[in-house]
Amino acid sequence: MKRVVLAYSGGLDTSVAIPWLAEQGWDVIAVAVDVGQGEDLATTIKRAELLGAVEARLEDARGRFVEGYVVPALHMNALYQNRYPLVSALSRPLISEVLVRVARETGASAIAHGCTGKGNDQVRFEASLSSLDPGMEVLAPIRDWDMTREDTISYAEERALPVNTTKSSPYSIDANLWGRSIECGVLEDPWSGAPEDIFELTAVAPGAPPFTEVEVGFETGVPVSVDGQDLGTPEVIGRLGRMAGAYGFGRIDMIEDRLVGIKSREIYEAPAALALIAAHMDLESMTLERGLAAEKRRLEPVWAELVYRGLWFSPLRDALDSFARTSQRSVSGEVRMRMGTGVCTPVGRRSENSLYNHSLATYGEGDSFAQSDAAAFTRLWSLPTTEWAKVTRSAG
Ligand code: ARG
Image 1 (cartoon, helix red, strand yellow):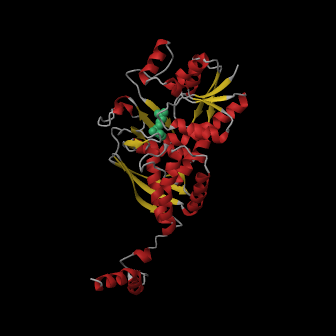
Image 2 (image 1 turned 30 degrees about the vertical axis):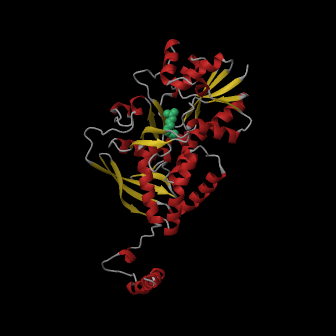
Image 3 (image 1 turned 90 degrees about the vertical axis):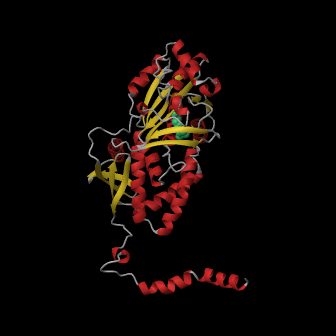
């Protein structure tokens, strides 16, 4: 029988995809990829088998996700439309890498994903898969099927499929260690506030002190410590996310422009990502030379947009990553972050590569700045506009 490797999340769409593909005559190999979503993936794998997968595999990609995807995103302070830290957009190319490897290992001739035709994820999967293996057949059963979410829920209910999504809890959720996205249901009304029970990573913990300070350490742009304790980057992400999340920090409620032209209402919670980007940008402001910093800030949204739009495997992303890596050579030091209800903000920074020179900046004792140099400088600086003003004035 012909084999297909299915990217299996355990959610509604990929769960109904298993019996559906089987009905079309495919042997389904379900692959659940651990990208730090913090779910019980052993249960997910069992569910895939119950649903009729001939094989179900769990692939741990957390290390590769952090090193190869999250760290480059942090280097570029990546926020789509200035707000969304690309949580799902980062995992799709990595999941595609895993799918292609499993397809080769199992002799499968096709790869399937459970995305609808309305979202960005279909584009990210298909653009990644065709870059990694142009000959691979790609199936998109949910897109072909064209059912509403309610129809899909009914299909699952009629067949008593073991899925968690019900008509009363109709959310579409995607999560990994960089954050969590929540769509559908009441959230589709952009005027309605998000119900409190959709949040898992962000809620003010009762009895928390009004403020907490925490020191985050970076080594060439990579987060490596919390409060002076050396940790792996995944642990820094985890710890910081829990701390900031317990102050209710990290929620994003936005109208987002999808690649397919739709505006959608999106709720995210990404306490670690937003805290680390804020800290990292702050340390860069101390350690990057002015011209490099300005050019980097100009390129950051280019990177974010490229990755949002599914072009991870592109020469532009490669080239931008080389730029980013070079820029990070001096980005080492510590940032002191202050957390309070709904906020997490830098309040101190230090670095052995600091370009902040107290004797140049001070208005007090020990000033080494040559004030007299400034007089000639300002005359030459304003020379073009001074000359222009003289000529326009004399011309009336
Ligand atoms: N709108 C976000 C993005 O395009 C989130 C997608 C979440 N995916 C999902 N299947 N719920 O990155």
